[in-house]
Image 1 (cartoon, rainbow, N blue to C red):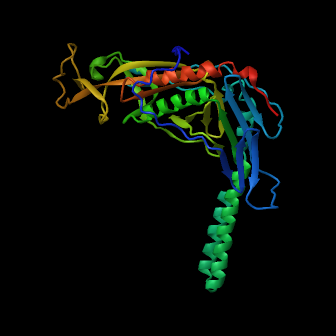
Image 2 (image 1 turned 180 degrees about the vertical axis):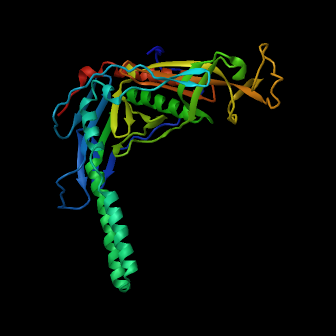
Image 3 (image 1 turned 45 degrees about the vertical axis):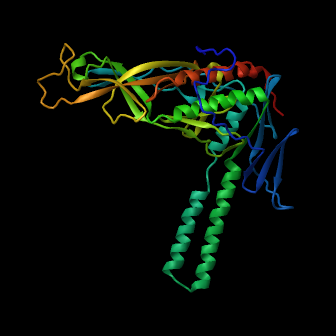
Length: 381
């Protein structure tokens, strides 16, 4: 980390939002309960047992150690190391753009995450049966409607179709879900709460963009006098958990192109299609920069306009009179946040409100102080 917080980071007049911490999680007919002794599993149907189901995982985070346990054993997996690829380039008019893109998630395997990533990848690769059952149910109801044989048979057919769909969704949930419980001491709970609230502060911006590429401008008069050009798209930062990962804490999802970063208390899970990687907060390098952006889109309501320019400018910076249609463009004061790790994570976000990225970076650094040595304390049972 470049920004190392001393003590509790500055909250920058942050409005505390808090996050929920549940003691039980339901997955289909199963209920996972967290107690002082670990995880217990119960089902609402006495005497009914299924031969398959989700695994319960337990993470205890405290100043005296950080332990990861699971209810069932699995084969040990190896972490695959790959070189971080060189960022590709492409031309956009007269500007050479360099893509800002993360590497393969296969190289993002945090030391304490190998077993969890193996389990998540296995569940991600498990085929869902519910789409097939949905298709069969539609064909069944359609056939009954075409060859109408009375309300009783029609009702029985619809009941069978609905029951099959519900059962298929339950089976998919059991086969594909991973249960992850977190148990904090007071200090770690406070550290994650700070990160959670600062992330939601970023999400409250009216404009959030993912920058996919950037390049230097050689002829500024055709680019409104700008010195650099960025390729950006609107994105989201929101409360969200990964599909089929059931956890007792509220997590924040950051969409960055084809990948999604999920902020968990002990690590960042990186989802890329059907694959999952992980990076530790102590690995994360965050650069926060103030930037002035010539805005060609609608200006977000919370943006600060600090000047204006023209679509085409002359050498002196004034309007180029050769162009009949040469509208003025606002110059906005924005903030860029660059997230990088040595394992290949490389993402850049732009926010319409400046002055809030530093608080997020300090919250990450504060949490990293407690998790940076946890790879030495990992236990499995």
